[in-house]
Image 1: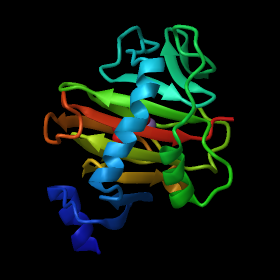
Image 2: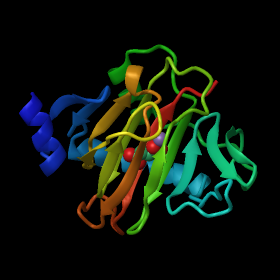
Image 3: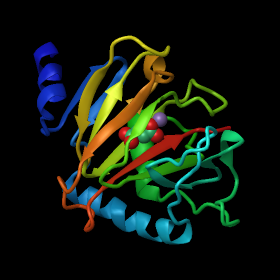
Image 4: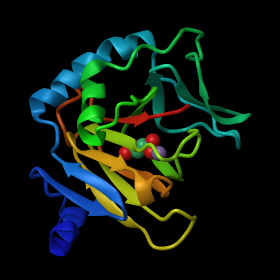
Length: 215
Ligand code: SIN
Ligand code: MN
């Protein structure tokens, strides 16, 4: 298992498998190519109703990742800080979370409680996400479930406190990560993507969906 985890970290092995790293549960190739295409089709009307936008961070810069959300709440950031908002910045409700996405939550968490936010991150060629914790939710006993679609992304996995050693792991299209237990408040980020490494999205790029219980 140790060697296997090392090999996946270094080379991004894509066979279906489950591994655990720093408490992150990583389901490699969990979604078949058909299931991935089905999710993209389900996301199309969501992205039409709630277009991607580039949030401003409290320091004043703009995120390189473009994002939107589905569910009762959407993650939002501006000069006043990070928070969940009940409306898209253009004033409309967020669209419902598509059922095939909720099915992944049901299958991997076994929880009756469903997420009330699906944050949709789009990484273009130069986008990245700095190390951060997901801590704007009310109850950290619920996991965050992360679904990767499209180009490969290099996930960095850290510690529950800032600093210290980190590991890096390539996430490929169809991989799903469950961040619960000791990993729920672990720092994580995406250092870079391998643009056009996948043909799932016609124009390239990476979509990451994170399912969260907010309230
Ligand atoms: C996130 O932390 O919100 C996104 C993680 C990822 O893109 O894999
Ligand atoms: Mn996060």
